[in-house]
Image (cartoon, rainbow, N blue to C red):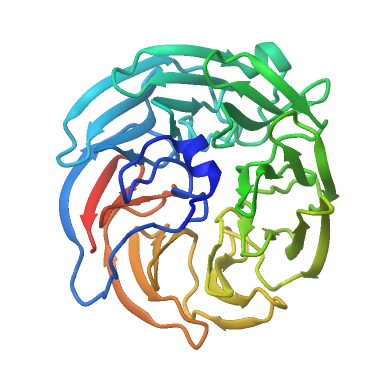
Length: 404
């Protein structure tokens, strides 16, 4: 079986089970090469590590965990031994970001490990490349100084996507630099596209056409050609009110299908990318089917699982059909929020209450197999799942659990 080209281009040489970027190996929230989880036993705590502030989740590759957080006046990137949490290296730069709403002053974007480098994107707009082995700073790019990237409501949150030797980001820069590509080796800007403001969603590659990236900007859907930034599709898809966000990443649903979803009376919609004709066609749009405030849904076997509703008023876990958006089931309990990972035929939901839910990934009915308190409540960040271990964090620490 031939692996998709982007795995080699974007990630380089990886161990089986690595989680090297936002939403995992293929940016779909799905663990690869993992044994089944039964949910019969309590997850086993292996180790924990105190961290600073921020919502940037960890990434794991080649036996190391990379964490990006804020400690006092510094933005900090650290490499830890995945087996025991011992420090390998640490790199810092002065932190200047102040959240407009007093929410959290740490980083939001999950780092990316690619071709021997660690790429970070800070909330103040600094993009950095560090050497994976040593932590040495290789280059730095200031999107504010270079492109006047605006802070927005909650700072810059786009997790870097690395492909074809380029770092792709939605930064909302001025002068047609809404989306940019930086050279992975030098940090120089290669191309720019659109005048879209930045949302809080991160881009993905279309699995069936890995030369094309899908972005969910503040205005809506943009598909770009990775080689030169040519805009292949530009679809308005956002709330009518200004005080709204597009935060959930696009979800690849097989055969070139892409699902986008947002709250604030937007709902979910499915598009079909026609590779031969280079054309994006809408298949359906439905309000109140799966209105995702910030959590990226996950796809599994013809269905999408996601958190429906606003964080302020409570969310519910739903399963919807990709074919028509019909709701298959809704969990009975409301949540403040959480993030999702698919492992085999199970869903791992790390809730804002700090619980880990293990759920059967089936459209037949909601089946909660186990619920365990693993972190403190009141935090949101994407966990990583690598080689049977879950790496999850809250406002003060990261915990590592064996759930295999």
